[in-house]
Image (cartoon, rainbow, N blue to C red; front, side):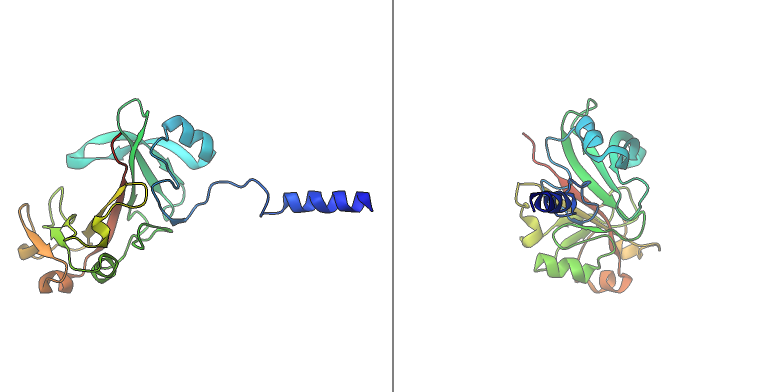
Length: 203
C-alpha cells in the first residue's frame, strides 16, 4: 500500500500541473511577463535557453541596436527586447512587429493585425494617429484620455503603430499630419496594428 501511494505521488509530481515547464509562449503581455524591467541579456538567455538570441534590431531612421529576441524561430511568437544601455543591464521595453502578420501575444486586448475599430473599442474613444509614409508614421500620438492612455499595472506604457501594405492617401501622409481614428479617410484606408511596444518606467 505504501509503495502504491509513493508511486502515485511520483506520477502526480511528473504531471504538467506540477512539473517545471518552459516559459509560456503566448498570451497577454504585462509589465512583468514575459519580460520584467529588471531583466538583462544574461537573465533572459538563462530563462529562455535556446528560445532567446542576441540580434541586431531595427531602430529609428535606419539605426540598429543590440537586443534579445525571444522565440526567434516562431514569427507569430517573436518578441524583441531592448535595453537601457549598451551593457544590457536593464530592460527598457519590448516590441511586437508584424513579421507574421499576426501574433499569439496581446497587450491590453490589442494584437498585431487589430483594426482601428478594435483599438478604438479598447481605448473607449477616438485617438490620434500620426501621418504615414515617413520614419515615425502611423504611431498613436494621443489617446485622448482613453483607457490605453493609462499605464498598465506596474506602470509600463503602451505604444501602437498602424500601417498597411499599400501607400496611404496624401491627406494622411507626412510629418505634421494627424488624423483621428474615426476620420473618414483613415477608416476607409483601413490600416491595422503593425507594431506594439511595452515601455518600462525609468528608475
